[in-house]
Amino acid sequence: MVGGSVVYYRYLLSQCTPADVLVLARTHERSAEFDAAAPYPIVRTSLLPCFGCDSRARKLVGVLALFPMLLYRVLRHRVSVLHLGNFFPDILAGWPVARLTGRRLIVTILAEELTTEKVGQRRFLRPFQRFFNAVARWALRRCDRVLTIGGFTKSQLIACGVPEQRIFVITPGIDLNKSRRGRPIAAEIASRLAGKRLVLTVGRFMPRKGQDMTIRAMPRVLARHPNVAYVMAGGGHCDNYDECVQLVDQLNLRDHAFLLRDLDDESIAWLYEHCDVFVMANRTMPDGDTEGYGIVFLEAGAWGKPVVGGRAGGAVDAVDDRVTGILVDGYSEQSIADGIDQLLSDPSLAQRMGEAGRRKANDNSWNAKCRDYCQLIETLTHSRNTAISRD
Image 1 (tube, rainbow, N blue to C red):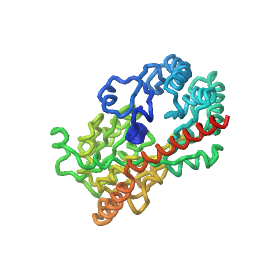
Image 2 (cartoon, rainbow, N blue to C red):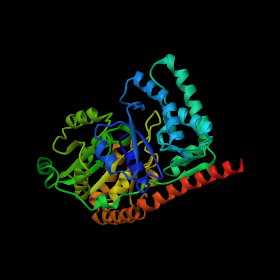
Image 3 (cartoon, rainbow, N blue to C red):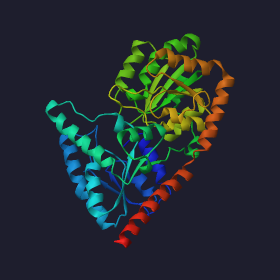
Image 4 (cartoon, helix red, strand yellow):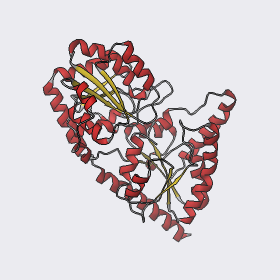
């Protein structure tokens, strides 16, 4: 997994110990250092399905292998609560395991799992996929708890039929230490950005995150602010990286738009520190794919930066419109350009919004959120033990 969901889990479990949690994760070539530093044990396997990076055959093997893997780990380690970090297809194996063994079940829903219909391109497979989607949602409505990240996703769950009393919201937090470290970015990049006002996006190159629309908006921004550079820092699975590169060339923005991939945390921190405006003009895609929250808005706020976000998905929870930033129409080049222009043209407004963003970030540290998660696990464990004792 790559992206905000990984950051969410990383910090949510950061105060757990070997007595609290065992993590089952997919094998990754660069996982050794992370696993050694984790305060809890991590079991890695190459059999877990990886959607977007595996062949159909490997995905099928992963789905079929998940049931015996979960059953074995639950029984061997005497697990009281099974928490599925991915909704589909994990719930097709996780729900039967939980019910067969009498364990409590938590499923995390971030947003796109509900708003995007998982139906493939091959017509003869679509009836089967729709059937499994329906089964997954049926199981979701019967989980002990559904963990989600904000009001937008909670409303989607309620609309899906999940009882409100079973929904547990823990909004993403912010690692304040990340806003206190940074080192000069690579000299070649720094020289190209020298003397320019920076507009920054941090996030994977995915259509819903809106880098393409922000590139399209840049000529309008440059007409009023010719000394601006738009920096896009992304990594992982990049659906529309090539499209963004082509747009930069087509619009003759090579001196004003820079796509940077797989930067380390210190380089990202440098960009946050030196940017004037943070923008992620997210939008809901035609297939329903949307942003669940937007941790990057909090990260920008921790640096005291004003933000421009799309009025879609969970970004409306992460950005307080006209307080910490400006919400715009992610499908409108003009709306995006106007939001950026307003913050670049009014330094006092930008400063006020940046300070409000810093206060919001300070109020959303991970410590309290970790305690909420541990309390959720303890509550479910106690309810299971009480049920067993009554039996």
